[in-house]
Image 1 (cartoon, rainbow, N blue to C red):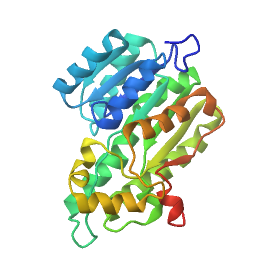
Image 2 (cartoon, rainbow, N blue to C red):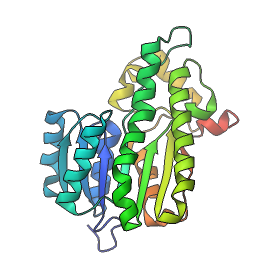
Image 3 (cartoon, rainbow, N blue to C red):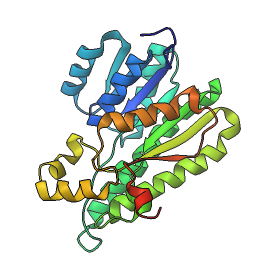
Image 4 (spheres, rainbow, N blue to C red):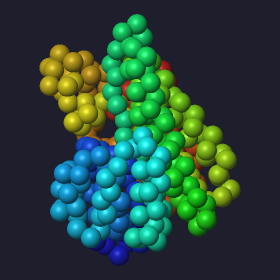
Length: 253
């Protein structure tokens, strides 16, 4: 750790910390001097994260869609570390179905995981951030929210709602020290998207959609999220940063 580490003396809570992106966020944040609160459903995977990062990581088991679990996690984190400076929300889903094939259950699940869950996490961390007049929230949207991708109706609706939430919250709290931003990835090589990477035809079609000629890696998205949380982005709020290999731009965003 260098003396100039970006997140020295900072604390982040990472929702969905055991996923491909969440685990990368934990690793990069800690490597850059911070302490991480890892929140996820899997106790076993959280134990593995804890073994990797030691006392710079606090692991908390909970459900990202339950307000009581999130509130309890924030209380535990603030008791342990004194505050939460950054919220990274890396929980989501991939529903690839046409509108006709999407059941009401499918649609409601997409909304719950991709819009309601980050809304609840923001509400949980906001009181402490406002009290300290310092904080940054960074959520994961999707290129599908703006690019118009086939069979992405439920996901696009949920992520477009998330982007609207981010922009409005950014304006509400702009003068009170808390920033709200998001990244909008294309296809990223994580366990969540594993079914696409295991299908050669689907993978080739996905690669061809990205002008840079490859799909993303967790480090690509984590780097963008960490930038938005850092003080280097202190004058950025209400932004949705594409981290998508040019996908959205190439489709006339």
